[in-house]
Length: 486
Image (tube, rainbow, N blue to C red; front, side):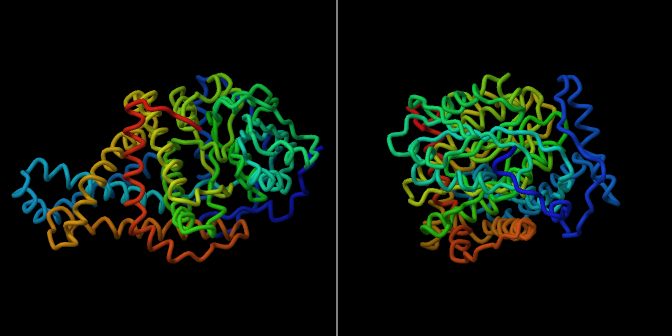
């Protein structure tokens, strides 16, 4: 018996597509799938990923067709930008030479424009198959690594208790040598389905791997110790896992900010999670190339994770594990309606430490699995290629674009001028379309989008100015091999 399950309501038999039209659930139940041999994965994926969509849509555009359409639109935008930038290029070339001028314009205007155009067209084309709730929900393990989480762990457990998940939930919390009262708070809940494992402080990856040794079910759902799950989160995440192609090894949930009212820094991050990170997830999942099953909220095939020796002992353990799964031929999914709310850093110093870790994690992934760009036949190789260029874009933004802004304030438009603003319309359009997409998600889950206009304006105009220099520091630290800590 599941201690946390509630009887599903009639509403759970319906799902809404991107247009808001209700679809009646299919009549045949879907059982927990068996994981097939590696040589069957590709055939299963090609078959499963199209059947459901073709049955319910009058016109179906294959994934590769959507990718070609988005790429063509992005290239057309770059072509237009290149022609409009010719006066700017001529003026800049007179001062620093033609080749350096082309490189600067490429990294501060053309390449960002390409990325924005590709994301916008992808978000517009994104219509994932609607979830099927008429399934046999398997028992799952919920795995949490905790270190001095006394302030957050109680709310996290309450969120788990409130889950509308029809199957059994067995919770594993690995206490990574906490020195506060994390353990006593966990014990106060007196939950028979909660197993607490004490470990010496060794970092998040080691804590997760210790918990992996105690996993007994085929699906692990990993969440951070400060993640509060929306009541339908587990049900929707597992439903997506079961309905995705058989070659799926993990499905990432959608992570949003829960403490956006704490400080102005959390208000800024609310927009980043709500539109920026979510749009990248949607883009990547549309092309079956999701690059990160984040530790804050994701479901994994436990057998596959164990076969890969668990999470690597690196600072970006979730990134590197995900890329290792992709390297082995597995697919990573994403479910935008499975929402977990996480605590974002409340101070600039906390934000600095977090984003620096994320930047280092991306470089770790590139160092270990960057060869996916040429060795993988999947579209995930495209996004790995983008990750190779992003550090250069951040570098030029920090050391070229920002000084250019300062010069422009004094009337010298060598680097930043009116043409540079061509990037802004695309950035605003991305936020607009993602806002509309997220509104649909929130309406489905009966959630309300908070008003945060001031945070939006600062996010659009200043956020990148804060983040790019932090990322550059993280890239440099990782390339130099400086000490890491969780």
